[in-house]
Image (cartoon, rainbow, N blue to C red; front, side):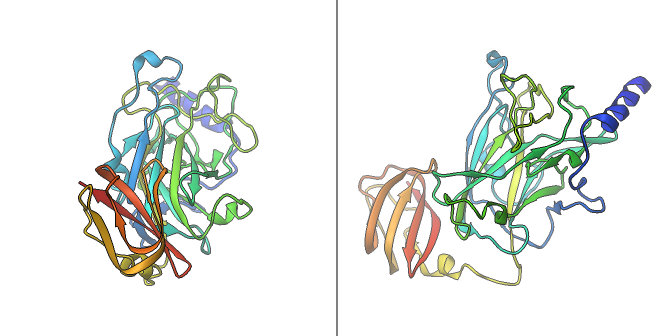
Length: 321
């Protein structure tokens, strides 16, 4: 055991170049505690695409720990596992907007371990329309000569713009301003987010790379039912004393909701354009102007209802029985 501890200590000393902010709770860390009052709301819905327990041995099957209920609402230590290369799409009834400083924070269930930290990482992508996603430029300075094995200690200072770099109860914050040059998204209307598990395998057949084409080294294999990135929650940051989304909360109220398949829904304020969108991002109904929507050809399920009026856009969940 003493020999193992020495190896871990030496590994932390030589593996990687510490360059970015340290672990949550330490001086200079950018991490945000899950109880911070700058978090004003949380993701509203999610759809998961499970990855493998071991991407190099698919006979083991896919991960199955947690479900989408654990990805929405406040961070609470209950998470959903993505597995090797798995992903999850999150939906926000009200858009995340580019504001001064960080705009949202992602929570994983990493923990302090053997003089370092056990971390599992994911890329973060955002979208305004559910179809075009833009990835935050991620950076990894972890050494790529030695594979970080399962439960090996890591240093958060090796990573930037990778969800999971901070241990619970701290989350990794992101600033939409970094994506200001992208033409595929509207930074004032981010309704979708996709998290993609980083396969930390250094084998070129499976390796994932950062914005500088460096292989990203993180624990591998994690060949069990809860392997891969484990999402706890995504919190939206803002001024907790200010209400900025009154249009989406009060004006565009459709009823009844839940609605019956084959019926219709109505709003008393009208809209200039309305769309019904599946949780996979497919627009299945589009209407120009009016105050009601016919659901005759819409199957039972959970959808997103996107509405435009007065130059504003809002998205609300729509449940059809």
